[in-house]
Length: 164
Image 1: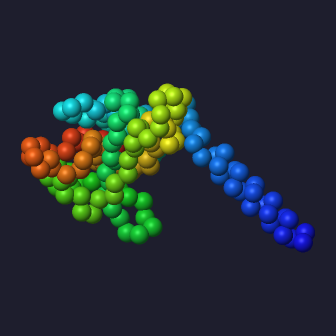
Image 2: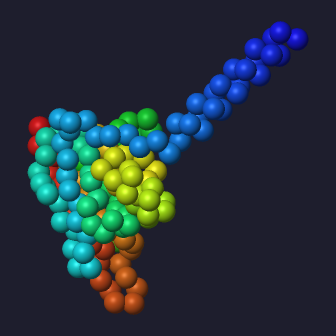
């Protein structure tokens, strides 16, 4: 009977920790590399567009309820994704994502108050995503990764250059 009580308390503690931990925003470290992402109807802009290898925090500035994809080269199972080649970037511009790893942020999933409260932080309602990058080229893409079938417009892409 005592074992069952201890197990029950342990399960309740874990569930409570998970529930209370969910939705919590995490601030960006003060000395972190930040890249500000601005998406307009015609372009994706990164400021700065060149960063050092390591942790990089992409901060979606505009639109506040927008989304973006971060594209890297897919690697073998269990390995960290890596930089894209020039050829990969050309293929991406044509909507070809084969062999690429895609992560992203959607800042529109919460209500206005939650978005405002978590602005500048990582988390489900925040506008910041952290990526670990090595030297090379990476892509930030707005909207759909495919060429628009109606207009033939390619995806809006900005290239992030990472130096050692």
